Each structure stands twice: as C-alpha cells, then as structure tokens.
Length: 379
Image (cartoon, rainbow, N blue to C red; front, side, top):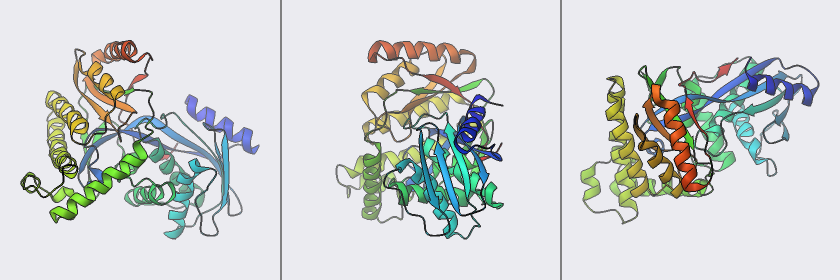
C-alpha cells in the first residue's frame, strides 16, 4: 500500500467513522510537446504521470454526497437527486460538483457517497492536478453507482465541468491523458476526433519535471484570453479552428499584430508535435529534445506565456550534459518545466539544475523523475 493510499484511507476513517469501500485514482499529466493547441483541435503528446489524486469512498443509501478534501482541510456536501449548482464558498469542490452534474445530465445512475480525497500532484504547477481530481471523482461515482463511462465521454464530462463550474475554458488534453494514460507510453492525441496513438518512451530515457514553485496566478485569465485570441484568428482566416490554418494564410497579413504570433505558434506547434511523435516512435530522442526546445522558444516569444522563473529553470535544465531538451509545460506563467534526459544521468541533472535555479532565484525547487503511468481507475 502506498503512503498516499494509506493517508487517504485514514482521512476517510477519521472523517466518517468507518472504513472506505474502495479507492479510485487518476493521474496528473505532463505534456512533452503540443502546448496551447488542444483547444485549437491540434495534436498533443502527453504522458500520464505517477503523481495522482486518490478518492477513498463508501456508497450511501441516499442521494447525499459528502466530500472531504484532505489537502485543503475542507469539506463539501450536495444532493445528486436534483440539478447541482457550483459552490460559491467551496470553489475547490466545483470540479467534483461539475462532474456529478455532467453524469446526472447524461443519465447515469448516480448514488450518494461519503468520500475523502488526497493527492500528490502539486496544485497550480501545470501537472493537471485539477483534471486528476475530476477524473478520480468520476471513477468514484462510477464505482458507487455500478456503471462505466466510456473514457472519451469521461474526459468530455471533466472538460465541461471546468468550463461551466470552474470558469476555465480548457481543452480536452488534460482529462483525456488522465483517463487514458498507458504505462511506459506517451499518447499522441488528436484533439479533434480524440483518437489516441500510444508510443513507447524508449528505455534509458527519463522525463524530469521541475517545479519553479511559482504558482500560475495569471494563468486562468490569460489562458482564456489566449483561447479567445485563437478563436478570433480562426474566424478572420475563415477556418473552423487554427488546426486548419496554414503558414501561407497567416503570412497573407490579415491578422492583427497580436493575433498573428498567436496563430503562428499554434500552426508550427501542431507540426512540431507530429514530428516529435515520429521522432519518439523512431527512438530519436535527440530530435525530440530539439523540438521541445523550439516549442519553448515559441511559447516564450510568440505566445508570451513564459515567466522569469521558467526561463531560469529551462536554461538550467538544458545546460546539463545528458539533457536532450526542455520547455515549459502547462498553461505557463509559472508552474513546471519538463525535460527529456538520459535516464542514467537523471538524478545528477536534477541536482545540478536545482542548484543552479537556487543560485539565481533563492529557492530550492523540487525536481523529480515522472514515470509514464496508467490512466484512471480503481485501486
């Protein structure tokens, strides 16, 4: 039994005075490449990681859901027999409420339950802790109600919960990676039709995640702004989404000075992601790393979602022998960087990069190896 599982089961017993009947889990994710293109219906290449949200739960005989968040020391309660509204006071619970309402609308036989939740994916770090919470909650509702939701539909329900209950107009990548991850593999996800093509991560290659410790205070509002800019650029170019745009269209000059670099990033990032998939499939991690570094420069210069801390971290990682490539991951404005490195040197790279970051920023960052992991389910 893992430390996290033991912890969440202990929290459940302390809060509800009984043992849980089951434990559901869902992983966070780190995106190797394909940033800010999922809501443009492009391609992304994430891995589900061994940082996760766990829910220990026990079905009830009524329609009440009582939910305790161990990491926040907060609790929420709501009724599933009627339309569920967002909470004004327990905003963290809106991921759970949004998922429950999505399942209710879809006609699934929800059942009340007592539940305790805990996780080890850092909040606001760009590792999709929110998607992990939503998918773990959905797995718990599945187990309590005795039904199964197709994983693409589960991802859609989680995405809609963020749109309607949280106010972040996210794409589909985070939820789909959390729901459908495969151990040892990255996933090429077509965010238009949700097809998933697994690709093995070559032996001897490690994925490092480096946390700047700066939380993404601007990410929510700026994320929505970037999405609106992309939608406006697609409208001007006369395409359904920027997935359908070409560089020739962009260079024709119809876009404003703000919209042009946003669209340029998206079109090039989609092409980079497809090439990165081919490189990974062929075991060419050197080329994968080069594409990741190109992606970072594009996110910094064209999409403008980097930060001073991310720049220091990416530079510190990229400077280490054995690092193939590094970039910011997630929405940006803080959070984490990701690097693909020689597995034999992973610990040394992490230590040296952490020391360099501390010299520049005055804080020691956590840097850890993340293993490509299976998607959401029951333990």
